[in-house]
Image (tube, rainbow, N blue to C red; front, side, top):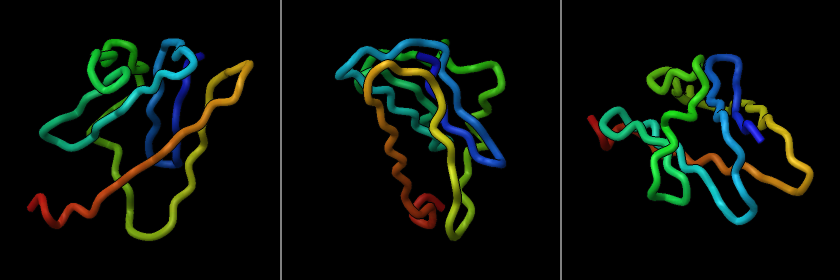
Length: 88
């Protein structure tokens, strides 16, 4: 319920419940900026009011993030990134 990821610089929060076996993919590439349930249905309207997609930047080196929300069962978070020099 209401999952989120936060760092010292930015946060992403979703105001929704994700059922078992489902996932939300948040794409922060400037030309795409999406939040998709199971890779297809937009849930962008469920993004928290303080979520600013353009602020989601990974600085070089190590970073720490907190996975937040409530679940009575097991849940997990996967963060994937790619170097941006190919997009210049």
